[in-house]
Image (cartoon, rainbow over all chains, first blue to last red; front, top):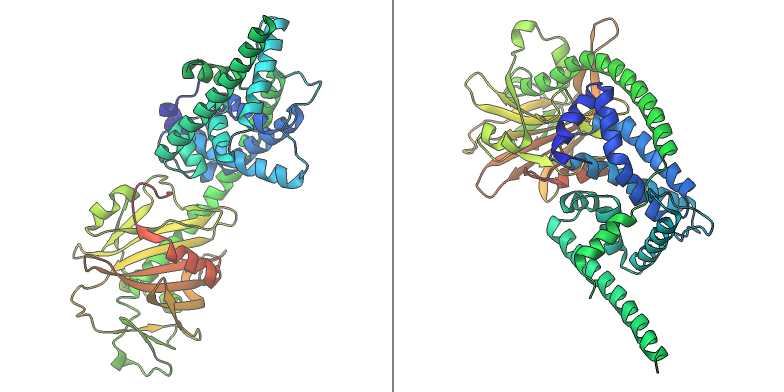
Amino acid sequence: MYDPEQEKSLIFKAQAGNREAFGRLYDALLPGLYGYVRARMSSTAEAEDVVSEVVLTAVQKLQGFRWRHPGAFRAWVFQIARRKLADHYRRNPGFNRETEENETLPDASPTPEMQAIQHETRADLLERIGRLSSRKQEVVLLRYFGGLRNKEIAGVLGLNERTVSAHLSRALEELQKSLQEDAKRILFTRERSYD
Amino acid sequence: MIELTILEGLLSRAAPQPDEEFTANLRGVALQAYDRAFQQADSKRLLSRRRQIPGWAVAAAFILLFGLFMTPPGRVLAQRIVRFGLFIFTNEPPAAEQMLTATPETIFTPHTIRVELSSASEAAGFPVFYPAFLPEGYAPAGYHPERTVEVVFNSSGNVVKVGTMFEQIENGKILSFDQIPLDPDGNVPPLNFGTGEVEPQLIRVDGNDGVWLQDFLWGTKVGENGQALPVPYNLLIWEVTVEDGHTFQFWLGSEEQLPLEVMLQIAESVRQSSSDFIQ
């Protein structure tokens, strides 16, 4: 679990050559970073390439990073991720974010049935997120897949925290509405089947 | 009705997780890269310690401009004269060349404190300005990641300048930004400023009068044999009077010799410091 309050101490230690501190930063950051990048990529392999690039770039530039407030480091890493993703899109203009047909998304679920349900839920949610405006997509993915707080998202996107909060609320409302409409459609179909 | 909390739970659980093998492999690669980067940083730090002398020299040379190397206009026979605010630019030797021949007794060591940007105005006693834009690759120089701002006092305890030195991470070249408070009564007589063969260009900087000096010997550095060498800078100087009546002169010097358009971009981003600035 990432603790922004511990960030300052870990950063300073890592910048002073403490490998353990660097390792802890890596362990804390990687899941969210991967989650965010993977949601933006068409395959696991591509996502792993981009995540590797982000991590290595962050390592190279670590000495130049200046800590300012809790969460600043994570925002900085995700800014690098956004730039790497933009580079990837430029290099691959036919980019398509849809999940590959036969790809198994890694999952910690205990049973194959649960994995299947989660896979379906994830694909469905990604598809719905994909219908949001690009700014709302970014905010939702950074919040729930990247695990960032609103203040950190504001740092990544160059917005103020209130704007992020507004985008997030509207995005959730749209997602909620979209799910409700589908639920009604299913219910209506069932009712019709009793006619 | 789908509750928002349920939706948020679904979204959080939908985040793809990295494969364990990938995570472990990348961790190993990242640690190796970290070790390499840190070894390089160690070497750079050694170089940087040597570079502290030029850093000091730039500051000292700058301070000296107001004393040692500046002369009332009547005392020299200048062939070229360009007037800008306090200064009369002449073809006298530039500051860095004069500094090479200065004796230790004539160089005074200013009293300097380093503070965080957020407390710089309080330390200086006037609003401190700072560039909001820097070209890619520049970061504050030195070993104080938070205390990036230098406040320099003269022997009377008055602030002579407030400055920050940035460093190009790739090549270690300096970008210095200084703010000099000018006498509010404007009673200071004009001073000669030698620029050697460099022609000062009078320009406009964000709506204010300014001067551009290209390839100007402004700093010094220590050569391989320990000798002092003059270092050319591109230098942009401009004056601003702020709302409360304070007039400041800003000096932006680039050892990398950034072109005028980039220097203007930095100059135009200068504003009163706040917590929003990148330090």
